[in-house]
Length: 118
Image (tube, rainbow, N blue to C red; front, top):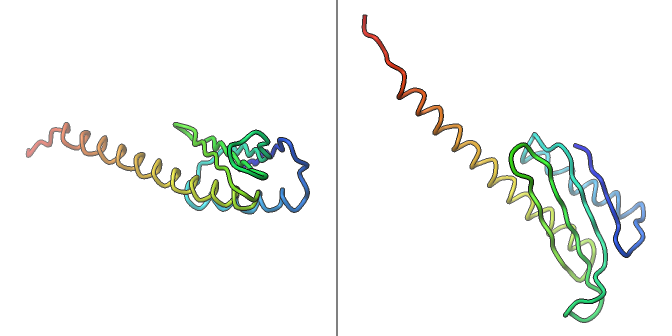
C-alpha cells in the first residue's frame, strides 16, 4: 500500500510522518486490497471550539467504493488514532458487504444450474 501524507497549516516532522505510516499501514490487516492511502493532517483556525483544533483526513482507495474518514480532535495524535479506528470499522463493514454479495451470487448460480440425474 502506498501512503501519501500532506500537511495543511502545520509542518510535517519525521515523528508525525512515522506515526501516520505506522497507524495507516496497520489497516492492511483488515482489507488486503488497499491500493493507496491519502492522509491529510492539519490545524483548523476558524472553529467553534476554543484553542487549537487538529484535523486528520484519510481516503483509502480500495476496489469498489473508496473509504473516506475525517476527524477533529484537541491533539494531532488523537485525531490520527480516531481516523485509523473509524477507517478500520469502515473497511470491515465494506469487506463484510462484499462477502455477502459474493455469497448471494454463488447461491443464485447454484440454484439456476440444472442437475441431471441420468
